[in-house]
Amino acid sequence: MPTTNVCLGLCFFDHQLLYAASDPQKNACLSRIGAIDFNFDVADAVLSENNNYLPGLRNTLADLKKRFSVTHVRVLLYPTMECWTALPKLVYDNAEEREAHINILMNGLPRKQIHPVWHTLSNENFKLLQLRTDDTLKGVQTLTADISSVDYVSAFEIGENWIKHVRPGGSFLTICCFKKCISVNSFILGKLRGATYIQFDEPEDLPYLWLQRAQTLPWMQGLHEQIQVYGREAWHIIEILQPFWDEAGTVTKMDTLNKMQVKAKEDTYGFDLELAYPAIMLALN
Image (cartoon, rainbow, N blue to C red; front, side, top):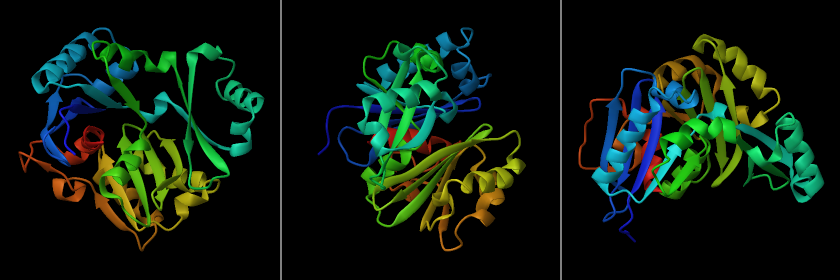
């Protein structure tokens, strides 16, 4: 049922802040999808906690909150702000083992600065561990300091939001393209199968890096009926990596509202909708 709450989804690509505001009166509908251009790299400003630019971004967010009467904000984090790893459930079930693995992964960082979250996987013998630290979250926390209700969302959770939105069967792969990084996430029968991210210097390095990563993550070469690609230069990533994906899978660049199965007041936009797709999913769920 529709509610009176308005959720604002946010993501950053290059010099743009992309946002989407939910329509509290209609399901699967948005009151606004937009992009705000800046003369600096927004993502770099947030990641590097650049105090020259963060106050302006913070004021922009405050304006959006007031304009759309926002009650809740969800922000997409860059994968490089986190650590992801799959561990046996036996580790999760044993407190000493859990803490030992966290300490190893975080290289002795004080425990009070580390924020672990465990995610369920389709293989019940494993759990996905997501680690964030106070240092890596400083920039985005400064950005959202005036917002009372905020969620910071990992790239693989966009696929989980798609499942809530569409309830697809079978399996699908999502690839979110960031600057010098892609997030690769596999889902099967409504559950997360695996998640990883690959950093690169040049997109042309990705074929080698993809094959290297797939040697230890067999789900990357598994059957995927649908392959969703979105974010920065999604078309270029498709061009480079499509030969390494399952030939039977349908590759979709998420660049129209029809593909996203959502409705909004405007049908056409002056920016690439595949950049706003994460913000749209965050606003809907």
